[in-house]
Amino acid sequence: MDIKAIITDIEGTTTPISFVKDVLFPYSYQKIEEFLKNHWEEEEIKKIVEDIKHIEGRDLSFEEIVNTLRRWIEEDRKITPLKQLQGIIWEDGYKSGELKGYIYPDAYEKLKKWFEKGIKLYVYSSGSVKAQKLLFSHTNYGDLTYLFSGYFDTKIGSKIESESYKKILENIGISPENILFLSDNPEEIKAAAQSGIKVYRLVRPKDAEYIENFPYPQITSFEEINI
Image 1 (cartoon, rainbow, N blue to C red):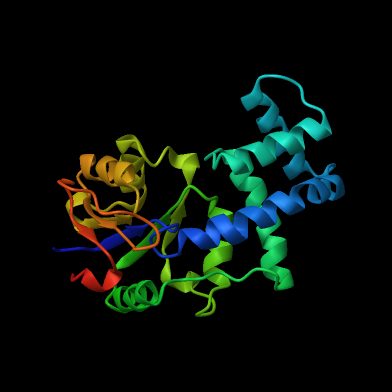
Image 2: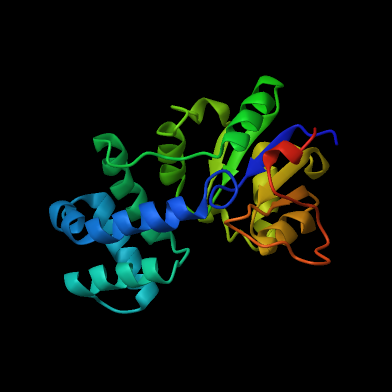
């Protein structure tokens, strides 16, 4: 493979799903009400609240806003205003030291090796770009943001639609046959492959299950990727 760029997912790929589900989500769930009370009049928060009302299709009280956000967290909804707000709340947690990101050792070693080889690295996650940068700047290996040339979230489009990957291709200006996409999600893998990008599906033992007759390569670790 003549790979010039690698796009990686986070949850279940570079980072255990348990970190997101058992650490980040409960943290934002717990902090949302207090955070909104303290920042309600800020323009950024007002815009997020308006987006929530627009999605719900009606005016909402403060209590209904809080309940809606908590319901979305429970349902693991990939909704942009939720992801934006979570990113802001997590920023406080990372800065205070309450939160620390976790990266799989094999992911760290390979990402560093690819970076040193001159391969461009990008992140595409359903979590906001802000949340992505926060996680990678506060990891068990220190600040890793220097490794990445760019970040993409659901603002560019759904991760299970091939159009989103075509938009990323336009953005980074590299031919699809020279790009590798890594994710644990089979629907994301299919969507990326439909845009011409090369793919590997991560099947980490605690995060995903091997799919019989899946049409694309499945691996358990970044160590299995040779480029």
